[in-house]
Length: 331
Image 1 (cartoon, rainbow, N blue to C red):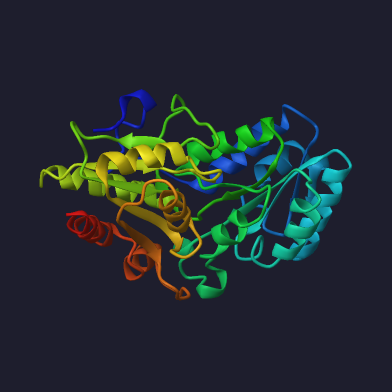
Image 2 (image 1 turned 30 degrees about the vertical axis):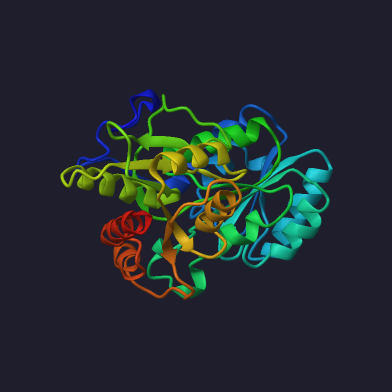
């Protein structure tokens, strides 16, 4: 059942559950954060409405900076503004920031320890018809390898807004990953959020058979799979890892000890992303069988978001099969 302590959306399993783009939560959160301090500035790479930065621009036009289609400049300008005491939240499509400007982020921001938030919008396969050139499935790997970098991947629009506000309250270097399409609202205004702390969203009665560790827009699919398994008397624990770095290793170890089987779910390459982070953590502490749901060493292509999620093995059927396989592996 849903974790009542988290005060989650009671309609999360309903066919008419509200769906909102995760990126909209960021836009609204940034505009709200801008009211708390004049340090916050918003450089953008000619994608103001797509990245939802128009909310901030409308309220604080003097603190909105249009860089143009120049993502490497975007990062270095943000670094310079940070050096002068500002706190930049800069955004583009994830394929171009951090995809195109990774070296500038590394050298001018993380190496120099300049607080700034890189907001990668339109991440993952579900960008859809834009095709493989615009589908960032490597960005988590690129960002979590950098020292001093926090990596956050919210599960819905409400959580994205809370993550934005949390980052604004405690300046740091961070990557905020956002997907393009509408996704189900899982959390509520009362659901707590803390950077670095995972959340058990779904816990069956008694000892669970398997833990699904999910992030971003695919958390909703993981929840539906857990609900489906109830009829088969298979107990599934669902963990939302919204912060991939720093990883909530304590929670993961507790789940591994209880279920002795893990399935990771992410809209990203299985190499270098959430699954790799979980495997690295548990290999050093409490090794258990793990199955990985994600993109498998290929590039994307054009299609509808749902078609692509299914084609690349990230839909409910694929998650279900992974659960059955990992249960069999643990014996």
